[in-house]
Image (cartoon, rainbow, N blue to C red; front, top):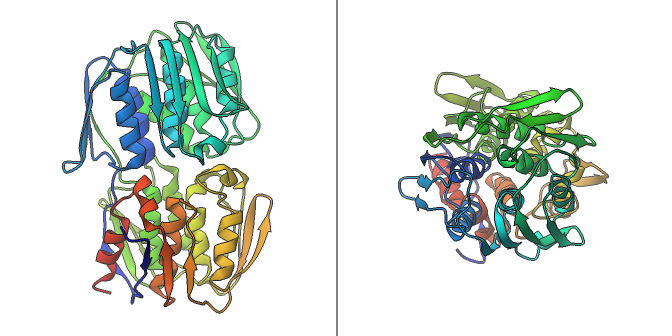
Length: 425
């Protein structure tokens, strides 16, 4: 891919597009399938950097996982809860799900495992997860609470643990997926406000599909898993990625067109489908049928919204907000500063380049639309910055996306798909 891409302006987009499979579901299903008894085939699985590093790590651990990108499938031979390899160094690049989920998975094994990532991954916290694993009898250490992580595994006895949940929901998800292998009734209780709660619901539902039920024992965030349960392999259909779908729904909202995404419904496993409700509040029309969800019309009205539970779509909403007739305030996303980039501070910089007035808040930002200008957009090696802010170029000439190849983390074909859906506009 070139060093930069100039986005072509577009008329009202009229398209139907099914994005690739959900990254979040694919990587959760890979963990469950790897630890399952029997074979699993993931159908509609995502093939991107984040899932490729997960597949590579499973193979390093002696678990056979074979990806077929052309067929969008991954076949996994489960290890029945017994990781075959006892010494491995796993490189997960920038994949947060891989780092967190594999750390907990390796803690259930026996042997020595080291997990590391790229420079940004070494700035993303993991200490709350390692501390919780140690409360369950593990021996897991990190570098001042950040990767690399070393797991001196001797099995995970279990018991009870408390885990902070205000920085990332992935810590709790990682623990939940490991609980069937603790050998006894184990309780995990969350501390602090749980961010991105729909992702915990997703984890529980994926585990349930593989045969393990998660018990929520109280309203304060206590979870447990029956240690007599075990994952069982089967053929699993992966939903289209709702975070990726948000870009195409937003394309309709920005251009005044209409985009249908098949395969997603309001009851999808992914909470990010709620993004369409925000577009509706801004003035778009939403249609739901047996096939999927369609967004039509322009988003003309700014809104004030807490996006804590769907924070991956906050940048997408920010791009839409540039075309509204009044300010938009996005709240509840303080944890976005700890993702692939600082998705509050860096986003504010890029929106100002495009002509907006931006007030940076502790947990979000207020965007007041202004006269848009052309700009070269820095993406900070963050796939969501590149994809979301490219949408501005559908109406504003002269928008250039630097380092567009960073979209390979979750959606390698994004710019080709964006060009395809706008060709007939």
